[in-house]
Image 1 (spheres, rainbow, N blue to C red):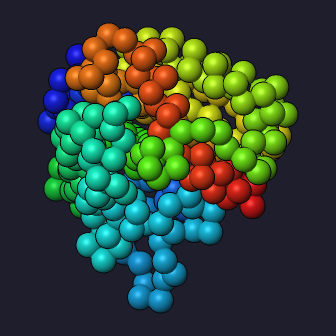
Image 2: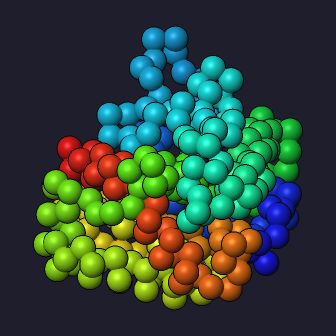
Length: 275
Ligand code: MN3
């Protein structure tokens, strides 16, 4: 069940969703160009020379620090929420935010570290190479979940911090161009998220090659990897994201979500996508 607490890394979890995750991860970590059915754990874990530039590339949406990556320890930690747990009230309640962040998201962070450690052991000949498939699949799941959630937290803002409303500037113009009008976009985005079967995500993304905005929705969190896409806005529709307050009424949660969408941050991501 998606509202269950996160499973141990070795167990299949109640997982969230967004396929663009691996790509997101690649974008956010400045690793664009690496393909991968498997996240390049060896790259992430490889030591860097002292003169190496910061781990974050110019195109990254968030900094390595924002992502919870410690380049000295070569380890992940759970980044704090960029606001108080009750900042999104009354639209998203404090208890949901607390459990979602400190339990579900935290489990992905622990999972990433475990997976990378296990894969390192395999490379060092200390563990069975046959386990490569297991740990790389787990890494895809946990890293994708982590990336999705860090982006998600940053793409939310409380009523007193400018959440909700509509975007302006170039992003607003692009939404009008590609969806007809903001209301038409909002309606379709919400419908896409509502229709996700089981646990999943819906995302507004920018496609680099064609310079257009697209809405993608999908199940879970690690199976939406697609190249040349940059996340602009996303919504978590795993039950753990809304069940305490909205129970089975996902539509009501999504209506509330639109009141805390952080269009200022989305506009920043859009500008970086097109830079
Ligand atoms: Mn979630």
